[in-house]
Length: 129
Image 1 (cartoon, helix red, strand yellow):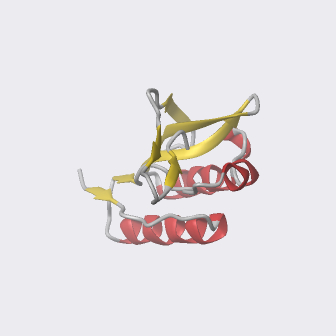
Image 2 (spheres, one colour; image 1 turned 60 degrees about the vertical axis):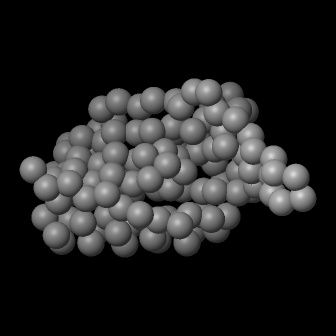
């Protein structure tokens, strides 16, 4: 079994993050990986709750997840989204999602014990997504 661990530098631009994820997943497929893993918060990373809510979707409506499911099914690959930010009843969840080679969601897990980070005179970061 060949495993690919993708390293991304996701930011506030959802569309750029989407393109990067697809590009690196396709690269892993070309390298004949059987299991492809993306990092935590692959879809979006922001200190702005407004941006997080704007570019977070219900799990089955998330464009990144839809594309990953298509790719997974087409190439018969296991893909683990380390996590993406999803909306659940107007709350955000940091959700890890495993997609099987048939394109179906096998399991998902909402990460718990999330916390926010505030460094004096530096930055405030929401880690719940």
